[in-house]
Image 1 (spheres, helix red, strand yellow):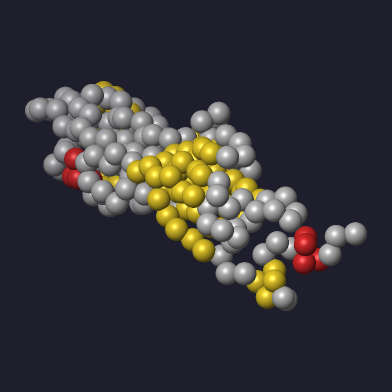
Image 2: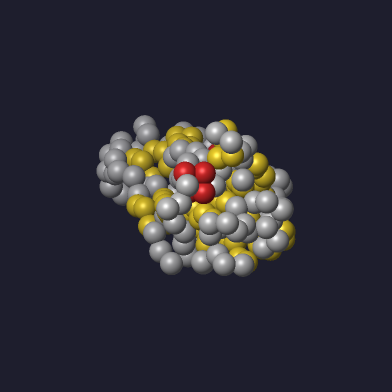
Length: 251
């Protein structure tokens, strides 16, 4: 019969072994976050490693003429995967390729924003492990055609794989039948990392935006971003989003 200490790989002499943590991400919060990849060799004596992944958020859509937001950009997906040694062994020496996703980039001037990218981990004895991207935002002409008090959707697909996974979500534009009074765009954050956010009232002048016009602060990691609004004149572009991240905990 196995001893309790053999079953509890993180317990030695009645005390817990401290868990070590590090993160992989690209700290460029600007227009173009190209993601970040590295190779990690598991140190000696390690028997457990957990990978938490966030995909890159979707970017906002551009707008021309009388295009306004109709679908908010989506936040990136989330997945978690744990690799554990068999009894009496460890995973020391295993090499894992860890890639944190790039963001949905600027500068899209048409009605569909750029999607984010996928975070993933590959390597010895690990099943497919990845967190998919958030969808880009969408604008359309005279979008404020109906009352809408509801948020968007939550999708889990094959681009997100792990022991536990949360799909990418997207919110809709929040409007009333009195557009000249109120209309807000909602955008999604990343699971476990942030929440849905509300933009400015699009029915208040100047009723257009370019890039950071609605607010430059995207929730990191995996946050979606705001789309443009235009009421005549030239086209303007949607805002870039936040990139992904991978958190590694090992003991």
